[in-house]
Image 1 (cartoon, rainbow, N blue to C red):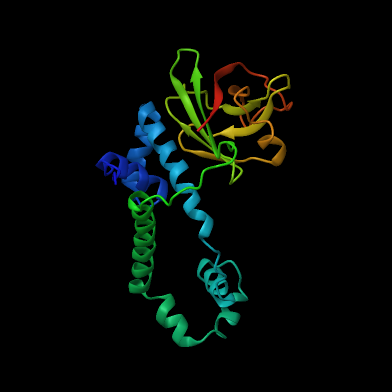
Image 2 (image 1 turned 45 degrees about the vertical axis):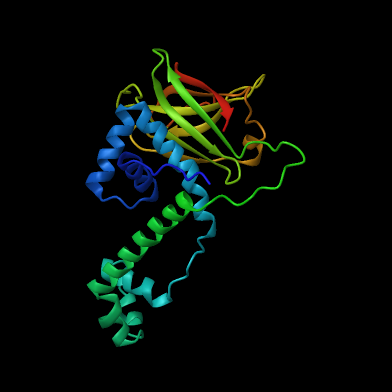
Amino acid sequence: MNNPMPPSQEELRYAEYVLGVLDADARTAVEEEVRADPSAAAAVSLWQRHLMPLSEDIEPVQPAQYVWVRIRESLGLDAAASTRARSAPAADRAGWWNSLQLWRWIGAGATLAAAASFALWFVAPAAPQAPASAPAGPEYMVASIAQDNGVAGWTATMDLKQSSMVIVPATPAALASDRSAELWLVPPGEKPISLGVIAPNKPTTVHLRADLLARLSAKALLAVSNEPLGGSPTGQATGPIIAKGAISGA
């Protein structure tokens, strides 16, 4: 059986960035690499495609009501919260809530859980797949949104199962402080559809409605226009198109 090659240290850093387990300095360093190096942006986009499905099995946990009361009291948001907080068991308030050791264990546990999920995903042998009776459509689609000089401004990864798109800045041209970059989906034969303003210095996640998913195809384009701060006031591009790229299956 052929085993996959182990990831390099650089690849592990990009995976840890996507998992959210890097400290602030390391995360900032990766974001600077993504802005300056298209290959780093592509690597982060690849890890997002690999690791986003891991979040499907995470179920929300509802905290006890007095936890929120305690938070509001600590922040001074509700004068009445102090009275209600006293109804919580004193041992709970003085014990686990103020325990620095507890929060350290919670943080360590979350980091280990993320790392374990990553390790299992990477090294577990693939389950045998039954032959498909008919070719299925792609679960992911990607696009490199290139500027007029040919340099990638952004990369986009579309997770069709999760109905989401992640746009990662590669080397976008700087915009004036009173301007915004707005992303558009351009289906063949239709007017551009705004997907919203995208951040110049960090990944942006866009929810894809059912009507948008239906328009994603290899014949569609993604485009970025230079718009007034906050986006186009008309619902259509008012500024110049500064980058565009075709969508393809992955």
